[in-house]
Image (cartoon, rainbow, N blue to C red; front, side, top):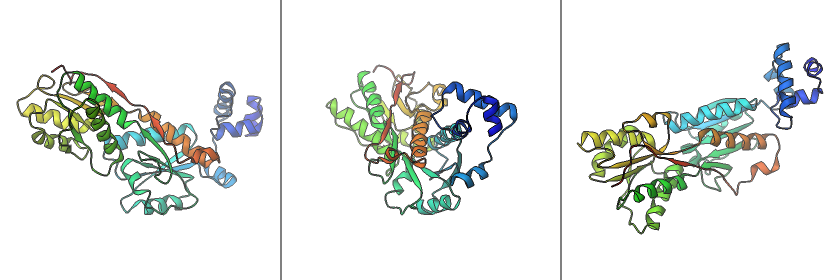
Length: 321
């Protein structure tokens, strides 16, 4: 490290800050230090650094499943955001309960943990290891930890208003599973948009986030002319169900999804959907967690969730009635 400092013309403390991902380094200085590290072949030794600092520079990630598109995209975005800050990522599932997942992470010496989506609902009732810093993604305020979530309700309101503005008398909703914070918020936004328009909400049809459940919902949605789906995968299944029923999208029924997965633009027809900014969501969550790990007293403010905006993306699956 001293050799790197001499080559870059900086102090050893500056090299240490660069190695540890501190934001308190001028970008040009950071680039000069990183260039010197590359020239000298210098790589920080994680185990040695853990002994010196008392931190492993490893974050845990707790999920119920990685089979859903939202969770898998958050895994990728979180791993990338952590790597930029010099942290590794360890993933555990909550198959045996969230307390068992936390215990496994504590045994591995992680500095803190992120809890994703459905697993977040398990946190309030859990007993947490006292030394484990925690941030939950997609949970209400008061979830027992700092909270970061997308603005699901605003995105759903925009999707529902879009369909009403196209001349549809009402908008049906293919909702996510009961017990999911994201599903509940998306349903709330749909209901509020209909209420603002003076429309009584039709009965909710509920799926499980999968394309198969979207396809199965086709029969229950009958002759609906406008459907807001709580995610793109269920919308994909619904598109197939509509096609097999002899109807057409968007001439007979307009369909909107949520997430804007990369494949949504290549559905047939391309899907109008609400875009979640997964990289921004992961960045906010990782930043909050690392700030808590590194001793920022304001990072553990649990009263005010960080809310990441969403945006409606209009494509060819919706049309004027």
